[in-house]
Length: 141
Image (cartoon, rainbow, N blue to C red; front, side):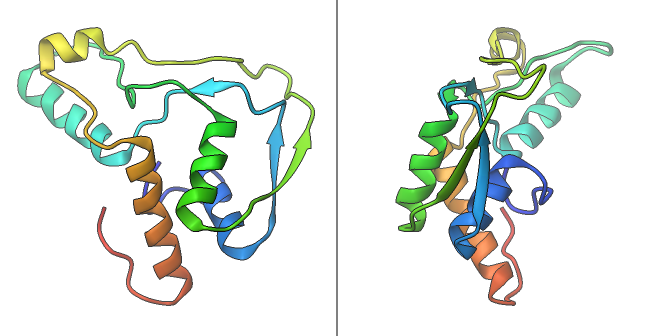
């Protein structure tokens, strides 16, 4: 997630909902967890793999903490100072309840550690969405 994220992705939809007051759909009870990774951390991991990895190496990259979608929504409300209009819907078939990345090998072999917290990453994407909506030139991440 981060500035310039595809508009169909969750963080973008949630932040856009905060901006416009539009309804967002949350599937299941919101207690499902994910390990969200900010775009600049993904870039840093790729650069580290190119510089220090061996051809064919595979590394898991993640944001460093597993959080519930309800936590994400509460963080967005705090950052935006706006309530979200959440429509709760049933769990989607095939949706995994909990996911997280095991970054042990990336940490050991590449020195990878996520640098952008969830709150900071959401704040950066929030600022970008607001600027984009105002017609200003979006800032780089």
